[in-house]
Image (tube, rainbow, N blue to C red; front, side):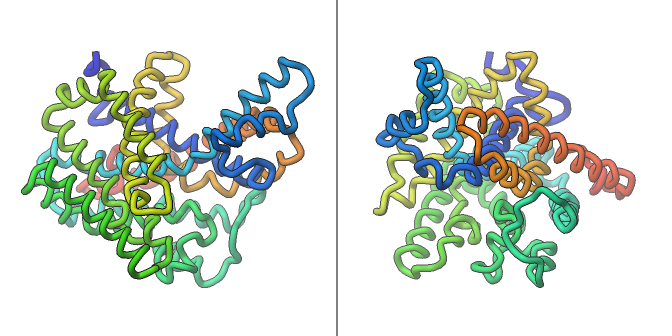
Length: 389
């Protein structure tokens, strides 16, 4: 049944942790593959180039060719790793809104809410900066200069061309989160006043309009559209907020529909439409929104399937529970591993990349766990530092 096992301890969802786990592992493998094969493989591998790629470098025996073909398909899937970022944006909105609606907005004064969010975001982020100052076996994309201090303070936007991808390109997501958190009380108030249907429609309209203006009218830097200007990603975040409100108010009704075969097909259709919309015309402005919504729905179904496998459920959920630390720490190590594995064939690379991902995930979990433990000892009376994730 859809409602069975929906919750774990407290207000966490097992399937939500599993979705985050799958998403962050997908992103980590993408960065490893990017470093390994951006010049060795077609980028991206499409249906048109798939068969030719399978034949390129394939061993002689039929069985070896079969394994090489499977490896090529897996590589093509991994290449779509950046799409998982939209899933994180959506479920960021979900988590914030679900907990707030469930507890009651009046019980969480906004100054306390802001302090909890900032103390959740920054400590692990600061530690990640310090680690990369001294850590070997990494690929760091820039020299350490004045931008290091700006990034340390949370600036990933100004000036956008110098800060957005500075040092660790994946950290652009931190800048987006800060912007969304700053405006979240206004967004939540609007959601409560107009209802989730009108609110989602407004988010879609504003996102598409802002992307059009930035891209076609102002000809602004593409980083703004990618996430430097939070309004451009409001579609995904707003969809997560609407989903969180529905789950807080009528969880069984929502899950019954999401986890039905119709919900899966709807998600798959939205995802396919998002891929189709990625074209040099007006449809492009709808691509990220459709892709993120559809992929999120499909991954919830996959998470429920994964949670039925005893050997997979707990590790995947644990990975998702610490996905923030993994996201912050993975890229320099995974790109280093990709470079080191360039002499290997694709199949061997994928196997060793999975091993590298395991070690990086365990390291990142240990770092985030240690930071959380240290903060818990410094907890304030309102639970700011000691808040259970």
